[in-house]
Every structure is written in C-alpha cells, then in structure tokens.
Image (tube, rainbow, N blue to C red; front, side, top):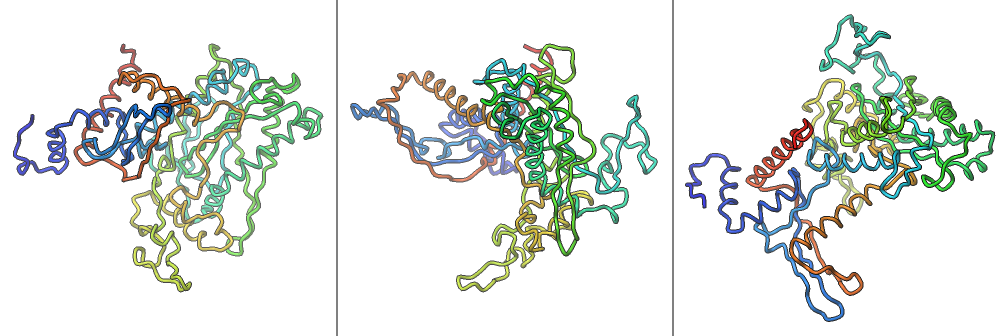
Length: 481
C-alpha cells in the first residue's frame, strides 16, 4: 500500500490517483479501466441486473453497481471520431473495415461469389468556389508552383485557403456542404436510370434483374468542402446473393456513374444570395476494384482500409471544431419562450445564439469565415430547414459520415452484437457460470445514466492503458510477435 502525505502532492490528478490506488478494491477499478481499452470519455451507469431461472425462481447471478469502487459501471463511449476518443474510433474503423471488406470479398453472411460482381471505387468532389492555394503536379508527378508562384509544403497552413478571400464564394461553399447528402441521393436516382438506359431496359424491368449496392464515407478536403468516397457494386435482384445480368459490366457501370454525376442538379433560391445551382465538381474518379491477391493497386483489402481510415475522421480534419457552437440553453435561437409565448433573451449567450463569439474561435481565418457564413445564412427563413446554426461547426454538412445500402453487406449493429455475445461468453466462462438456457433464463435489469468521463486519477490510468496498447499495436505492425 502506498503511504504518502497527499497534502504535499501538488497535482489534483495525482492526489486522486493515490486515493484510488489506496482503495481496498483498486484491482477491480483497474480491471474496469483495462476493459475499456483506453476509452477517453466512458459512460457511467448506475443500476443492477439479476439473472433468474424462471422454472425454479433461483437467482443465478446478481450484480449491482454499488459494489464497484467508484459506485458506477463504466462502459465505452463508442465515439466514431478519433479527435474525441482514439480507442473507440479505432474499434469503429475496424468494424467499418470488415463491413466494407465483406461486401467485396464475402464473409459475415455475405457469399464469396460477391467478389465476381462488377464493382468500382468512385470519388465525387465539390466544384470550385474560387481559386485556392494548392500543390499542382505535372503528368510525371512533379510538384508545380501554386498560382501564388510558391511551392507549398504538404503541411503548409495556406493549402486549401482562398487566394482572394474577398471574391471567394463562401455562400456557395456552405450551401454545397448543406446539400451534399441531397446531391448524393439524386446521384443514386440518376445512376439507376442511366444503367437502365444503357442496358436497353425500362426502369421497372431493370429493377427486376439488377440492384445497385454501395457503401460510402464523407471526407473533408483542406478547403473545408465535403466529398464522397464510395464502393459501388452491381448485384442481382436479390442483392449480394445473386449476380447481375452478364450485360451489366464494369464498363457499363463506370459510364453510368459519369453520366449520372453530370446530371445532378439542386436548385437553391434566396432573395439574399439569388438563385444557385449546386452540382458535383469536375474531378470525378472512377476505378475498378481488382480481386485480392492481384498486383493491382486498388484491391479489396486496400479499398476497405482506405474507407475505414476516413470513417473515423470528422470536420476537425479540415481545421474546424468537433463540437457544436450554438447555445444549448436557447438551442441557438437567441431567446427562450415563456409559457404565454413572450420571448425572453437568453442570458447564457446574451441573445446572440452563439455559445462562443466567433472572433475568439481558435481556427484559421478561412474556417472562421465559413462558420460565420453558416451563421449569417442560418438567420434567413428560407434556410431554416438546413439548421445551419446547429451544424456550423461541421461547416454546414449534417449528413452521416458513413452510410451503405441495405444489401451491400452486414451492418455495424450485427458486428457489435457479435462482439457483445463473444464478450458475454468469455465473462461467463471466466466466472465458471453454467451456460444459460434462453428458454428458462430471464435477465432483469435497470440502469440509469450518471455521467461521462473519469475522475482525474482514473484518467491517468486510462491514458496509460491507451499508451501501452498503442505501443503493442505498433510493435506488431512492425513485425513483432
């Protein structure tokens, strides 16, 4: 047992850690933190669960969070974003990898024959809203000077920022992000029509013999605009279990994608900014995905790893924030309504609706201007449905970062359920409990949310767990055993 005069320890985190280490049941507290694998913001729950044999009424197992050293049960936050929780985001990336890979090579209840279906990897980008600093290349791959006549380093903060901020179309950029999901939805509609036309079929006849399956992720470019990476595959009418007709080839799919992307238009009208027509950018990349084991660069494994990497990123990768900016007490309205409907100015934000003044945000000037544009357009009634204030920190993009069609492959939910089942079986075996009979076993539980995060001392232990696991992962990646 550690015996130190805690009053002489300056750091509150160290004092709390020493209190925790001296706890009679410290091993259990450490076991909980180890089980979370370095999660930075665990969810704290209070409650109990009881397992009962319904035939005899015997209590097979009882658990209550009061028995825990901290009085609560810790569970992983499960956050997708690496900026918020590296440990949980790594698990999310692994699940995404297996989901994408199953739709390309089979497995996870997807037949192996799916690898013979036509499939491509497509990237749809945003159009230009004004020239920006970049690193153009020659046909041979050499770096050319930017329009500003400089050779930018890959880490140069100027990359992606406008050459002339006064003429850059910030309103168009924000509206593109806000309508990116709508652009994708219309793209899939036009893609089905283009495929039917190229196969000489009506749309109804095409649906009877052909189905489009896809999985996509969103990525922020340095200029703060969203583009989509998508695995697009052709299946038979029953999804991944049946092949498409022989006439549905990779060439047909590629041509249909290019034609569909050119047709997509979303009209936006406003008295303040006039009429706009939002489209995809000219940079459209469509490449066939080769089978695993070939010498091609774009294989099943490479694509799955590429998509999984971007699934855990957020808007903060472009230099913006990973938390909302609107004032939560008034929900960004700037005022709260009394029961009789009288508006009462919010005292938390002084009626501005902003949680923090924009000039004080620790972001680059380009990002701050996009956020300011979100705030200005969000005041207009014609854009109220876009909820630009709520999504200003995402630079107006409010869609899901990773989505898939119904028949592409397995689901993240199914992968998580399989992992929960495996962990429950491991815990049951470790506790030497008999295998429960689902027909005669009843689990009764009641849980309440207590909060998130560790105590300062437990946070130090969690950081140590994450650091050790990262070293182990790097050691294995470098060929260790």
